[in-house]
Image (cartoon, rainbow, N blue to C red; front, side, top):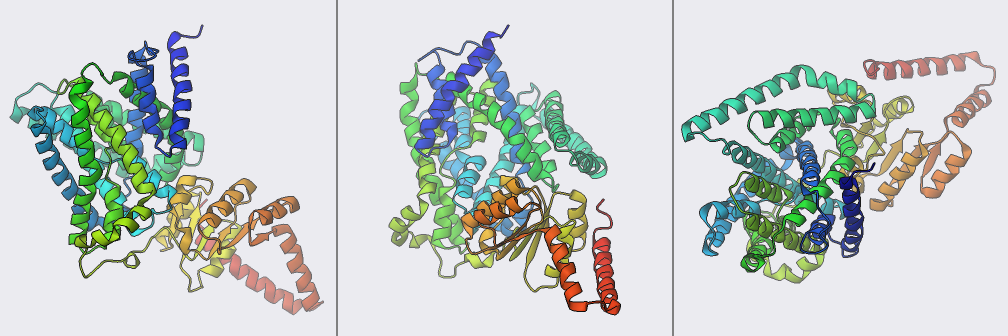
Amino acid sequence: MVPDVFIEVSLVIFIAFFISLVMRMLKQPLIIGYILTGILVSPYFLNIVRFEESISTLGHYGVTILLFMVGISLNPGYFKEIGKISLITGLGQILFTFSIGFLISVFLGYSLIESMYISIALTFSSTIIIMKLISDKGDIDKLYGKISIGFLIVQDIVAMAILVLISAFNVQSGAGELLFLIISKIVLILTAIYIFTKYALSNFISYASKNQEFLFLFSLMWCFTLASLFHLLGFSSEIGALIAGIVLAIFPERYEIASKVRPLRDFFLILFFVVLGVQMTFETSGNFIIPAIILSIFVLFGNPIIVMILMGAFGYTKKTGFLAGLTVAQISEFSLIIASLGLRNGHISQEIVSMITLIGIMTIAGSSYFITYSERIYALLSNYLSIFEKKTKISEKDFKNKNTGEIILFGADRTGKNILNVIENSKERFLIIDYNPKIIKNLSKRGYNSVYGDASNLELLNELNFKESKMLISTISDIETDILLIKTILKSNKNAIIIVIAHKIEDAIKLYEEGASYVIMPHFLGSIHASLMIQKYGLNIEEFLKEKSNHIESLKKSQELFRHTK
């Protein structure tokens, strides 16, 4: 017999689909559709949700996986390039937004603890929504995109610390005893994680990555094990999941882990935001609608101005500062999670959570339009933004993207070995992408610019800068993957030379139709090369022995390069 909660969840998903369809037509993030679904199925309207606790538990899984994914995205590589400005801008924006937001909240009549929660909620911006929006625009590799991701990472780290404090201060202890207890637990668990990561985790991941289903299972095990461990030690499970993701961010397999876990996260996260909508209170809505509008205006316009002032002070152009500033014009999933945690711990009321949720809806909606039409808005305001710009300016050309190359090679094994032997002697910058972690580790040790990843993983492809690439070579003999590569590259660079491989004539014709510049057919090429040798050398054995010698030398070179990859 199908349980009633199953029918209820199915109905909620059904309604969420149609509301999200409207959101998509309006070019809004689907998160707004999920919250509106919750409001619609709440007791104030359709009164569908009767197993709120069960759905809320499922939603908690979504939050756990969400923070795990955020942790995975905290790639230390960003800070090597734009670390200083990201750190200063991120911390500066947090400080100013918190201070001004706190004063506004107190002025609006909220208590000190309520004002603190409200101002904290206003401080953080949505890493996931921003990365999705600037990725859709193809701006991840632009200077403002890199800086935005950098200070969003800073925000995530600060949010992580706040989650620790909120969950820790739920313990009933004296201040001194509590502080000692927090520090002791943090030192203990981080030391244990460090030792395990250094001496064991790498081997676990290397073994798991050989099978994608097993890698997915390992990732979930790691996420929920640390989440449960932190919960047992008196912290929130959310912070454990976040740290679990941060640990995995240092491994090249992070792209694959993220792509495998994302669908699971998206499903459970739908239920979390639906529950937020269900829990919104409207009996006292008159008390918080005006404050919500005032605070939303501050986030939509105040946060970008703060970022523009900070970036202008460090010499960035007004356009870079403006575009980066628009990325903080909304509150984050973290804001809603922190508010929910505050409610769970009895620090704030449901009315405050409802107000913060309403601020989230308004600011996410507004900032989505800001970012989508940022170029048009900048053109209108450009003349008025000069006050945020110094005479000496930092330009886009001052930054290089590691995940790019004039030649990009997908697949360095087999056919890729021979191609690599040729392109490594060229003067062009090249990037190697391979699915075998041992190959990538070996190439990295030898100083090659290489990335572990699956060519069919859209997240990986979105992080690559194809605009600067002149040639892409794929030795992957999978027609669906090659078609995806061709379409992705031509979308951002129509002049790129694209070379792929096919073993069937019909596949080769299909790849040419999709836009490939040249299709390698190994069986045909082998016989053609042998025919040309016969035509050129005739019956001269000396010439064939020279070809043999050259071929052996080439094979040994490839063998040495990939000796430890099997």
